[in-house]
Length: 323
Image 1 (cartoon, rainbow, N blue to C red):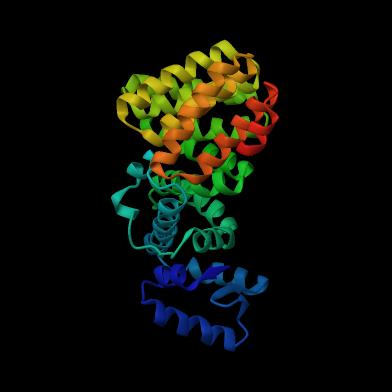
Image 2 (image 1 turned 180 degrees about the vertical axis):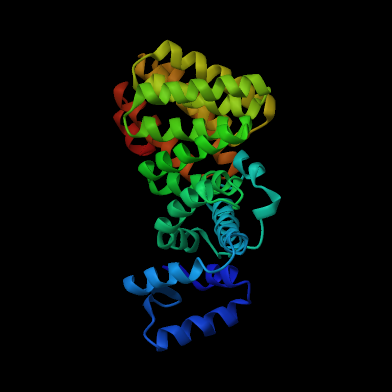
């Protein structure tokens, strides 16, 4: 099922011309229109269309597919800007496919497009990775750009599937930076699925590559994720060590948002250890940074944890106020 913008890239025509062509086919009952601006072939016609496509030179088919997949990549990067502004992954957008996609007014419009295209995006990652003549980097780019969607909506199975494909491509191409990112994001999804030992293995491999590359942003991210997994596994001293090293790097890099996140995570570990005063100090510092940068979700989550610590200290009215 395709939308007009992607169909236009396939045909290499303006969107208005593509829509007219699609509407003529729909009027002739050769296409279904399940929703406004969406088109799909009937099953038998899809088989016939595949036969017709094979009559075109392979290079032409690959070029058309590259244009369409490039549209998906560029548009997904646009959604990432809205869903995770300031995320270091934005620096990984390849200039070849960072522009030329669809624009959105807000996060809700971006999420609506992503949900509509969800099956297509996963299929596009697999197709880019395996189709001769199509740059395999498109699979990596679409996976990196899709992280915001997977993370916000909790599509952990999708995140594992996409990063598994991207990881194979990065190793085939010898792209160590992209390999480390794929391992980082794979581990992030694995721990959320409860697959803690696999998550630790993925994050440890990611950290080793980032150390090899002297990528301090990457090291901080992998260390932070390792700290979280150690916390949920009850390995609290290991968690503190990872989070403190991650925090030191974040302070060196000046990343206030992730500093606040690391400090909050440290507070949660101290709370698990029964160190309530240290937990309160960390959470209050984290809250102050979130308030300074105006990040409401971070403030809300930190206040929730402040309420938990206050309650466990017997300060119930204070806990109620935080909540």
